[in-house]
Length: 112
Length: 116
Image (tube, rainbow over all chains, first blue to last red; front, top):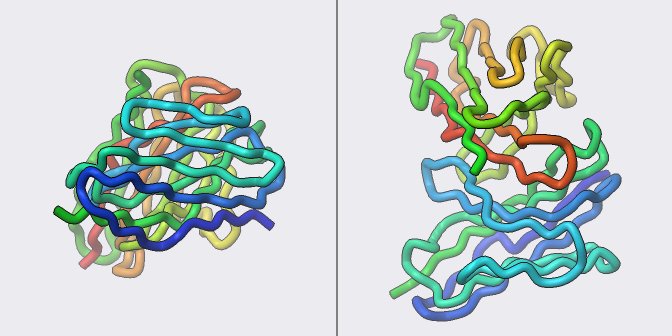
């Protein structure tokens, strides 16, 4: 079956660095994406890894190891506005490789 | 960047009413759009895949006659919740990506549906 695992909650203080891990088991794999969702809002795209390695986008970086079926999202210089839920999502082989399976989400709380 | 527009953003209506939600890709064509449902503090659950010009593909457990999907053009998909009941109250979100291949999904702003 298909499954993704993430920690349910993470708490950190402003200015700190946080890593949110994601492990996956899916039928086919076409990349790992990360999305941020604030309470009451829709998910917004943060980062995508199609190949192994690190992708950096400002304060956010994402890493993928396909051999380990593992990835992580790294948030640096945390700000209060980063408090949100973060979802990893894997594109699997369904529907010509466009199907997305979402992880359960990690709720990040940034404290002053 | 790719923009997906969803309308309405909030609906409150009586039990038994049918509600239509629109999802539009504003600056790209989308042969496929996805409809998700999200309950509070939970992840997104895929309901169905909307395919332009053909029937939608529904996930297991999702009633086809309850959640009608129409994808009549390359930029518009609609989800109609027929004869809605309080248990249908949820956050409904659509998504699309510009093309097949390694493109991320872009989400609409979601529709919060409350059935009284």
